[in-house]
Length: 205
Image 1: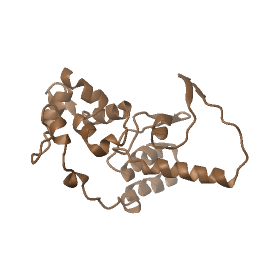
Image 2 (image 1 turned 90 degrees about the vertical axis):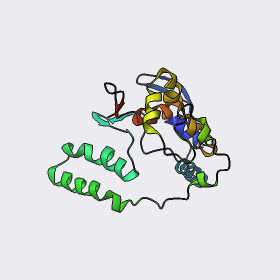
Image 3 (image 1 turned 180 degrees about the vertical axis):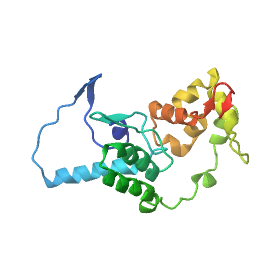
């Protein structure tokens, strides 16, 4: 996560060593609070929040003491917050509070409305390299995205690089290249994309 925060432009300490439950970071000298410190914190948060990912989630799960914290991707921010941050903890709450939290989770789509959709940058892209980057032509100009063909390729030995390094069509997109996605993030989203694959049928369930 520190690497992802650094990629977004937020100042973070460097990782010197990590092994199991040991994490060694750069030494940061203690300093008294000052106006410039708060300004630096605000600038770091702005840089972090302006960096948009491809979904709502994280490749790894965490824990808070004995309670697991699941971070698998959801379709929207309200869904992620309800399904990963509120509903899993209902059994640990008093019944009256649990009912209130459950009602809040159901109301989150209205309380946290999604922003209005922006115009698609694909419409003004002159070259559209994504349409020719796919090795099996699953994404072509004027044709619908061939999801079954894409998943079959990902499940093959030839699709190993796409599963671990990300969709080649997405990587070819000029806008995507500016996001500097890490391979771990790409592998996480590819695994989610293949989540409904049925090995017995050789297709999506």
